[in-house]
Amino acid sequence: MLRHVLFPLVVSLLWLLAGGASVVPAMMSVMMFDAPGSTENGALWWLVYSVWAFPVLSVISAISVWIGWALARRREPTAATRALVLVPTLLPLAAVASGAAALLVSGV
Image (cartoon, rainbow, N blue to C red; front, side, top):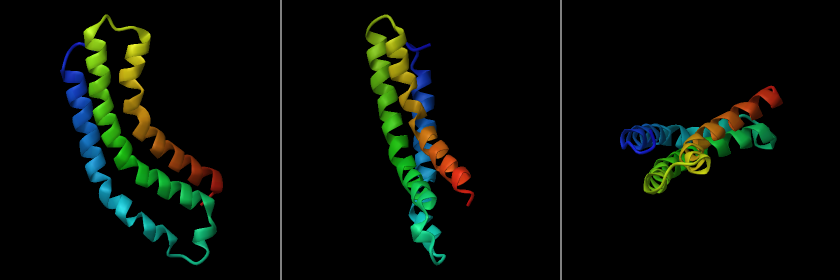
């Protein structure tokens, strides 16, 4: 699976599309602080940081999946090279999960 070019192509296109679509919410995320006293809410700050991180992490994921694929293609894929390919693709999801967890914990 790692030697075929379809996997990194599909993954990188999906992350670039998701990153491009998340630029507008990232620009509008400062409006979360319109309510009085919302600037003191740590969960909202964490949510804003995760929204801002998503487009950046999407681009990093799209690039790193190609780097990992090229490394895995040169030699027989081991567990470490498979992790090098698959783990960076999950970074944007970690940003989304951390923002959602911050909201769930704070009860906002």
